[in-house]
Amino acid sequence: MSTSVAAVADPTAPPRWLACRGCGSLVYAKRFATAHRVCPDCGHHHPLTADERIGQLFDTASVSRVGGAAYTADPLGFTDSRPYPERVAQARAATGLDEAVVCVRGTIEGRPVVAAVMDFRFMGGSLGGAVGELVAEAAESALRDRVPLLLVCASGGARMQEGIVALMQMAKTSGALARLDAAGVLTVSLVTDPTFGGVAASYATLCDVIVTEPGARLGFAGPRVIAQTIRQELPPGFQRAEFLLAHGIVDVVAKRGELRSVLAKLLTAAAPPEPSAADPLKPGPRDPLVRDPELLPPRDPWATVRAARAIERPGTLSYFAHLLDDFQELRGDRAHGDCPAIVGGTARFAGRTVVAIGHEKGESLAELATRNYGMATPAGYRKAMRLMRLAAKLRAPVLTFVDTPGAYPGIEAEEQGQCVAIAESIRLMAALPVPIVSVVTGEGGSGGALALAVADRVVMLADAVYSVISPEGCAAILWDDPARAADAAAALRLGARELLALGAVDGVVPVPEGGPQADPARMAADLAAVVGAALDALVPLGGERLMAERLAKFRAFGAPTGAPNTTADTPSDTSPDTSPERSPDAPVGAPPHPTAEEQDQ
Image 1 (cartoon, rainbow, N blue to C red):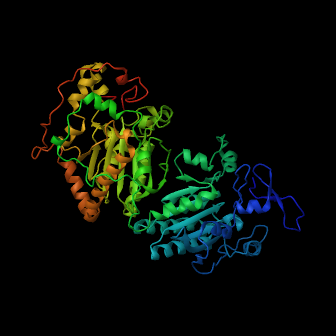
Image 2: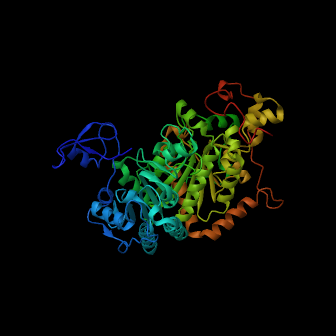
Image 3: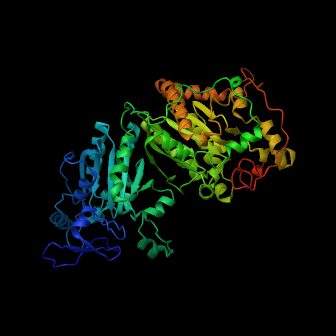
């Protein structure tokens, strides 16, 4: 279906009113232009030309052209109803462009970028030899200058009139992006409607981050081709931006008016460190971290479990809001789906780029259900790994926030390779060549927690817990009696004092009286001090030393010599607590079934 705007006036005069192709409403032409061709009634995003797109995104007067003149060859001597050179000449006359892409450099909110901007008017934005050459030249310019590359995509696919030469452009442009990956240069794709075929199966989806406009279509084969060739009934909204976001293919769906801000945040992630602005958080102690378990007061283990599960505790996104600047959430595993139990993205912390990732339970009953109680699926761990690889590419530290009862159990999780996803995340973190700081903010449940906690510095809040299994699971398996969960909690030594003595964590962050929820600003200020001090110590070490020391740290657990001290005091009152809060059927706390790691023990 055409997504252009039809004039409702004398075609020989500039129209004053236009009809939206999305809803049919009449829109005043000047208002429509001011809104960058977005319908104010239905929000339908109509196409922009390459020049209009550049004008919308880039800072005024910052734009200059990149690359040489476009040369469009006719390698096949192709003729359909007319010779191919005539079709190219017609497209040039109609659009005023040399080819289907315009390459420029400039700034977006002050951040430098090289961009290749496609224009669907030129032979459907098809990918031929000239387009591939211009995109490759733009990538090479970004590589020389070490600035991010932005690819604004709009295409029906490879240009049939150039045959195999057009097909080879997929390899050519993909190779150009591979060089940027190796050099640590950020790449961003802005997918507009439509983007199909050879462009979709090469540079449009190979970038570090994929942003789309609402309703934009992206796919290898279009719905009409699929329906006609294999007779499949397609689901509603198939290949549209919102469908792709839910299925983990794209990172962000942003309205046209929001694109400059979204892109600026992403480009900021590629910027060098800069002095941080005045800290808006309440000032806290310079180094609140407790490293000696004897300085921590004993806590009742089961009461600590209940405190760690409290619904009113700040979640990961709340900590991000307090601690981070320019946070841009990125979504999807690029393969299957997007898990709401793990959130993450790029940000700035104290003036340096970081990649922040964490379990998110939510802070209400409704959000707990939506976030699956913080129990991640394989798509969540694969999303986290994708973000960690982006951190390695950008040489940015990784911050992880752990708060989960465990990885999600269930048929679909097993079908999608839950154990493989957890194992791969643990392995990736073990050898990641950038600093990693992990904070256990609530529950640290088994392998589902460890998958985000193989770090150079692991700290936990004083009223958090971290364990191989939940107390309920341990009691059910070893005593065949879930009512003995409090006994299991004491035996597992899952509190901060005991874990610090065992060497499982490197330090403990005191919490306000009443828990983090009693004074979130103070809690965030203390965490900022702890994380900042850790990064100051870790960043200068370099990748090889970080990896070596991290591997040695985890290699030492269970070794016959140099075993950590295990003599920390444990509260003696371990009688079962029969209060309703500990019931596994309660909506807050342990899920009403064992976690994935507990099922077969």
